[in-house]
Picture 1 (tube, rainbow, N blue to C red):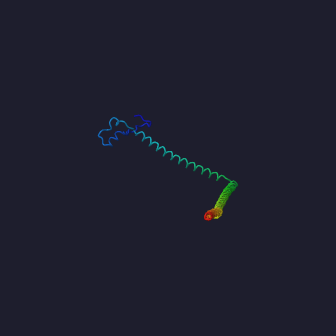
Picture 2 (cartoon, rainbow, N blue to C red):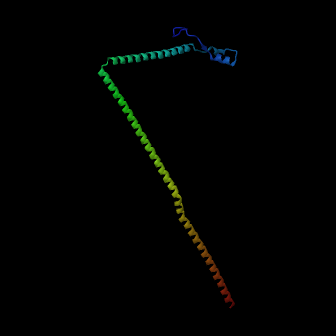
Picture 3 (cartoon, one colour):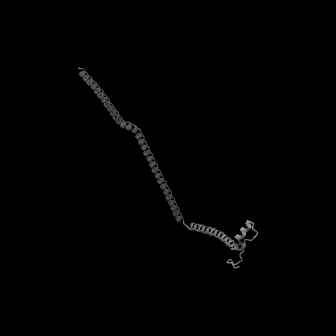
Amino acid sequence: MKSKYFFPTPNIPIRPAAMLSSMSGAPSDGGPLGQYGINIGPMIIGWVFRWLRGKLDIWMGGVLSRAYIRRKAERKEAKKQNMTEEEKAERKMAKAERKAERAAARDREVEEELQRYKWRAAQIAKMKEEELQRKEMNAQKTESSPQTSSSSHIPTDKKHAMAAAAELRRDHQSDNVDDNDKNSYTELNSETAFDDLD
């Protein structure tokens, strides 16, 4: 068997039909489909080579990184040794200036953050005050609403009472008119009766 790895790879077949027949307890070897399967030998060899290559890459990367850091430290040390006193003083001053600039930048960031917190606190306090004012206005409206409703109902009650009283007066007057008519009718009948007697 030819192989791209220049050495013979193992033949490790996996036949699904034969495995299913053996799991089901059948005596046969899976029939015609039992001869078909997948050879996983090259897959195992490829996985082993990929794993070894990853390990080799990690090891080589660590070695190269450590060598670069070591060479950089050696160059820095050699540069320090070759520097004069004036260059060392200038280097210290530049370092102090950079440190002061970083401290000033941190102070500015802290001040800006403090201003933002103050602004947020003011906004929250304003929102709470507005919410409290709205609640007070709603409470005043709810307190004043029963009074206005009762005052609005008073005229209608008076109107109903006046209308009922007027209707009672009209009924009473109509009753009086009926009584007067009855009395006049009886008087008229008595007069006619007396005239007949005469």
